[in-house]
Every structure is written in C-alpha cells, then in structure tokens.
Amino acid sequence: MEELEQVRAEIDRIDASLAALFEARMAAAAKIAAWKQANGRPIRDPAREAQVLAQGAERVAEPAMRPYYAAFQKELMALSRAYQASLGVCAGTLLPERGSLRRAAELLPKGCRVFVVTDSGVPAAYAETVAAQCDCAGVYVVPQGEASKSPETLTALLEAMLRAGLTRSDCLAAVGGGMVCDLAGLAAGLYMRGVGSYYFPTTLLAMVDAAVGGKTAVNLAGVKNAVGLFRQPKAVVIDPDTLATLPPRQLANGLAEAVKMALTHDAALFARFEDPAGYGPIEEIIAACLRIKAAVVAADEREAGLRRVLNFGHTLGHGIEAAAGGSLLHGEAVALGMLPMCAPDVRARLIPVLERLDLPTYVNFDLDAEQVLEAICHDKKSVAGGVETVTVPAVGQFAFRTAGWNELKSLLSAIIRQQGTGGADCHGQCAHWPRNDTP
Ligand SMILES: NC(=O)c1ccc[n+]([C@@H]2O[C@H](COP(=O)([O-])OP(=O)(O)OC[C@H]3O[C@@H](n4cnc5c(N)ncnc54)[C@H](O)[C@@H]3O)[C@@H](O)[C@H]2O)c1
Image (tube, rainbow, N blue to C red):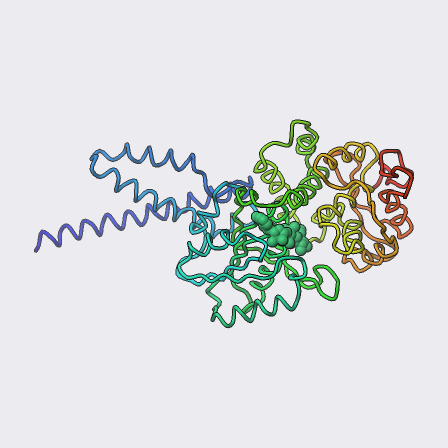
C-alpha cells in the first residue's frame, strides 16, 4: 500500500513537471502561430509533424513504449493546432490544403452543436463530410442562387437555428460558395448576439475572396450587400478538392477575382495568367490571392482606406452585373469592369488573359448605360459628383481616383460592342480610358 502511494506521489511530481513543460510548449506554439499569421502560413504543417514524430520515437529507448509515445505526441500536436486556431491564426490566413474538409474536426469545437448551412447546388457530400465530424450537427439547405442572399432566407435560417435550440456556445459552419458564406456568416453574427462561425468555401470565388476578410451581408430591396456585418469567422478551411465538381464557368468566375488581385498587387501572379502553358496548380493561385487579401484586410479591416483597392473592377462591374439582369456572373461583370480602369498597355495584356480564361472582354448584349449608372449610384462607393474608382496604371500597381458620371459613361462605352462595328472592344488606344498619370 505504502509502495503504491509512493509511486502515485512520483506520478504527481512528473505530472507537475509535465504541466510546466506543457505550458512552455504551448507558449512556443503561440510564437509559431504569430509567425504563421504574419507570413500567411497554414496551421497544419504535415512535413514538420512527420519530423517531430520520427524524432520523438528515437528519443524513447524502450521499443515497446514508442507507439504509445507517438500517440501522445500526435495528441499533443492536435492540441497545439487547436490552440493556434483559437488564437485566430486561421481566420483569413489558412492556406489551401487538399483533403482538408475531411480534417475539419481538428478546427471545429468539441462538445457543442454545429449548425451546418449549405445550398441546394453544392454537392451534399461536402456538408455531410463536415457534419459527420461533429459531436452533434444538423444540415440546413437553402435554395442555390443569389436570391437566397435575402432578409427572408436570413430570417428563415435564424428561425431554424432557434427551433434547433442553438445556444451561444454552439456554432455555425458555412459549406458553399460566397452566397452561403455571406448569408450564414451574417446569421452567425446576429444569432443570440453572435455565435462562432466556420467557413468551408467550395467555389473558387469564395476561396480567394468571399470567405476571407470578414464581410457578411444580404441584399435588400435590390441593393447588393445592403445589410451586413464585419465579422471574422473563427476558421476558414480551404479544400481545393471541392473544386473538382465546380462547373467551368464558376471556376472562371473565381479566376476573375484572382486576376483582379494580380493586376493590383502581384505582377508575377499576373505573368502566370499570361503563360500560354497555363497558370499552374490552382492551390498556388489561391495561396497567392490569400496572401494579398489577408495583407490588405489586416491593414484595413473596415474598408476605411487600403481595402477599397479590392473594389478594383467592381464599381462598373456591380453596375453592369445589375443591369445585365442575372445574365452575367459576378466575376464576369468584374472582368468587364476592370478593362476600362487599366492603362492602355495593361489593358492590352489583360484582354488575352481574360479570353484565355473564358471571361468576357466586351458587352455583346443590349446594355443600358443609364441603368448601369443608376445601379452604381446606389452603390456604397458613390460620392458627391461621381464615384470612387481604382485604376491600374501598371501591372501590380493601383491608384484611387474619383470619376465623374460623364466620364463613367464614356468608360462604359469602351466595353460595349457596337452592332456591326466588329468591336470597340478595347484593343485600340481609346481616348476614354484613364490616363497613366492618375493620382
Ligand atoms: N464577403 C465578401 O467579401 C465577398 C466577396 C466577393 C463576393 N461575395 C459574394 O459572394 C457571392 C458569390 O459567390 P459565388 O460566386 O461563390 O456564388 P455562389 O455561392 O452562388 O455559388 C455559385 C454556384 O455554385 C454552386 N456550387 C458551390 N460550390 C460548388 C461545388 N464545389 N461544386 C458544384 N457546385 C458548387 C452553388 O450551389 C451555386 O449554384 C455573391 O453574393 C457576392 O456578393 C462576397
């Protein structure tokens, strides 16, 4: 009996040392988290984990104990990752990792209910994969399409959360494109004054843009994103494997946003889009865009200054999208909206890039310029006497300037192909285009 007490006392002493070592280890993990945050690196580092496990096994002299020590280390690394995630490292900075949807459990909180929101066009397997990893989860499906980004769908979603008895300690997971992330993110921000949200973007547009940066919204009375919150999700899990089911037009839609970021920030990324052999692995494109977006958002989360650069192509683009009455996807409208805002030599390089990506370079349908201007006027970015625009004087650079309504009208005419002209589609040095010397 006395012997047993002695051994227990020894274990207590060892546990006390372990607790101190655990604290030191987590403090080191926090430093690594800060570095990852600053460098836009993912929490998970499989190569490093394999190295740690191999080293650990060698340190245990007793071969029979090695598998147990390896299991202990694996658990320790999972805790370390969860701790890093809790420090907010992943929000907006998680890099794409194939198969990460199947490892959602590493980030999702334990012991709470997870309300998984998806839409009817997203393959059901994605939401089910996430739900299956939760202790307790339900899947809520909204109809696919922008029409679901509405106060009505938002109310129905909030009511469903209420009926499910969700409390403030539960959370919400959005599995889908930008529409689902915007809608579910807003619901998470409003429900019980806010529950945690986790995004699993499944479109390229959501991976490079919508899921990152903390903007949530629904449309109201025909005005896009009229009601919303700035609210960061707790984590964003980007699994490029989910793009395998995405229709090519939707992929191109997301690539338009990637080209936008390349044009304003990253000449090397733009050169990849110019490469006739192709732009390379999609995860590298996503990673490059995430680095740009994360840096811009970190500098100006509330869009008081620098973040407005992400609106490049969006001022005219939003107007064109609205006037096109649903015939253009967001990225397609942005592609058109970027063209008049580039210096002529940049535009000359942009056109073949857009063509290669199957994105439009001119408007070949009836477009009412007045209607476009009216839509722009409703836009939050309009200011007295005109609208704030972003221009690209050289690839990888940008400038802000206010354009008057007449000028906007002229800019628009540059992308509208006139019947029978064979195209005023921007190949020439059009007088309407902004000058290189924009402030
Ligand atoms: N919050 C932001 O910062 C931000 C930024 C850009 C865009 N947005 C918003 O994002 C929305 C557009 O996002 P989107 O382009 O992802 O559109 P979306 O969410 O409507 O998805 C497009 C279509 O693809 C389907 N889909 C999604 N994932 C799929 C997959 N893996 N395989 C097959 N089909 C799939 C959807 O069901 C839908 O029909 C707009 O509402 C826009 O305002 C928000």
